Image 1: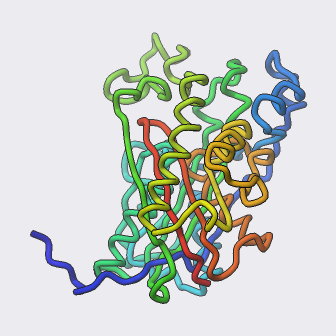
Image 2: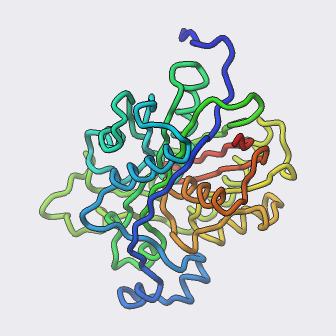
Amino acid sequence: MIKLLREKPVSVGIVGTGVCLPEKILTNRDLEKMVDTSDEWIITRTGIRERRITEKSRSTSDLAAEAGAMALKNANIMPEEVDLIIVATITPDMFFPSTSCLVQDKLGASRASAFDISAGCSGFIYAMTAGTQFISTGMYNTVLVIGAEVLSRIINWEDRSTCVLFGDGAGAAVLRRVEDGFGILSVELGADGSNSEVLKIEAGAIRMPITENNCHNPERYLYMAGSEVFKFAVRIIGDSTLEALDKAGLKRKDINCFIPHQANIRIIQAAARRLNVSMDKVFVNVQKYGNTSAASIPVALHEAIEEGRIKKGDNVVLVGFGAGLTWGASVVKWAV
């Protein structure tokens, strides 16, 4: 049995956020020149108008470190104060060492332990939940959680069904103890490995290593069964949100700001209707960045704060779904 370092768990919240978004913008008009698609089709089906593409000289750890540095600065915390770094990503720099270890070095967070989480687009919620436990039990004081992706390098740019959807970016959040009654009130996590085949990259790891014969095969790129993922997403956003609200002792009417994973505007709108949550309370930036997987929620959270959509005492719902299949929802009473 693990003995808690604190007799009573403390309240943990987000005290600073940051982002890193590549400068290069790839618009729908640009994609019209690359594949058989159109600006109108993409906007109608997805709501996406443009996405960011990382420079060839930069990697996931570079974006993650920049987002982390901004979050620490906004929280007025020095890198040496960080106890743990968790990076959620499906596009690590390499198999090992972990991307989080590379980020630790780039930040100069020499005291921090570090590990990665792979939960697809749900990764940030998973990572935030893990980080919260370390603080709540008293093991650590400061945890830096980052969602970072360079999806442009795992996309088949000749496949119009997927290449229009994804972009690159990173978002970060600093977790620390906050005033009692504030911070992360509840979390709902889940997974369904029986549906792992609908969203995957089959080649490149142990089961199907890249060889001379398959290096150009579709299996080395991201595959998504769009209709299956769509139906799953709409259902699970609603179900996991209601579970998280119930755990927090709140109702749908208590939501002040709803931040779902930014995958597709139609998924977001359908989920909002299912929950009977007004789109006025839903934060949307999918039109600017597309689907950035684990970076999606922290980037949206940072922008919602910057735009004044979140203030102290607000009930903020973060909810995501992704490869695995996985899902996660969290209710946060904003503390700063």
